[in-house]
View 1 (cartoon, rainbow, N blue to C red):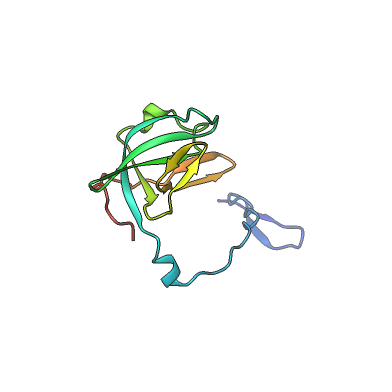
View 2: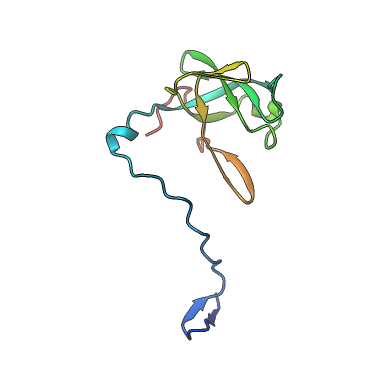
Length: 133
């Protein structure tokens, strides 16, 4: 790695990109509040396009012994068939919601930046329903 000199005369490593602007800060939550979330590993059993929305997919997932449906806004980033058989992380105890006429019984976790969107997934296969700690 080579160093360059900044206008102020300080040595700055040239191979390290500038830090991105900090995202909008949300209020701090207590551990007790965070612990109320039931984060679980789920296996995608089926995936298909939402019949009434251009950006949504319907996923049938298995969380332990329970099969649920979630609605996810990931259609622009994932082919439905490529998701079948994969594992994702979900908020398992989110209140059900109707999204464009379809019930969603949880929410998958994903991250996004200028390069696109990526699902949060375990690095190796785990039992469906495994608790995320």
